[in-house]
Length: 248
Ligand code: PXP
Image 1: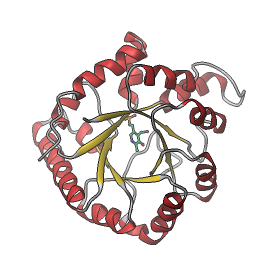
Image 2: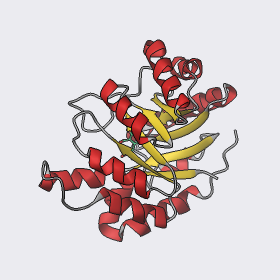
Image 3: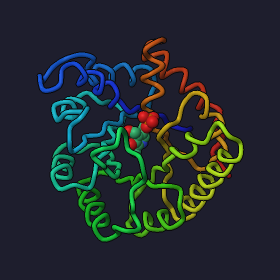
């Protein structure tokens, strides 16, 4: 069964828009996490960015306490954040690139260009009982590098697929890249997640990508929640995922 991880950063973004620096405020991402889990999501994702623009340190510690499913901490391979993550002990970390000026995580991690550093970090997390995922573009060299680094998972960056969804040629091209990368990763023994820009419209087409284990969805679910409430938004997404076949 394809699993759903809900990224609750966007709830914190809304809070910070009004309450930045005050140490409290609404909406509370931890309250959102409880609703998301009760609605049937299989995991929670939060990104502790170096600039703390949305999720704050206090959020991830409370999330660790309340999570009853799986806590996926998205993070840069930055010394300060690695130390926090090793103490926090999420179930899994997803290493992502961070650029200060980006609105959200824009590109994939250059795993191929940082094999030694990522292997060292991967080893530290695995030694602490924490699984590791690498957020990468659907490119053969990056998938090979992920296997070399020894991560348990990759998360395929679906941003280009989402961006080109409206035009047939672009959509088919990006879908083919995702299919090829998923097959390659599966053959190398990696587990395959996917995320970024996925929504209620483009998700059914993504079913053509084989071997997917989990999707990480943020913006579209939180956006829909404004109109339907969070419980219904999660349930609607789960329903769309239900028909996923999985195999190539
Ligand atoms: N996966 C990763 C690694 C991400 O960085 C993000 C964005 O925070 C997502 C998934 C979720 O993307 P979106 O908010 O577009 O659903």
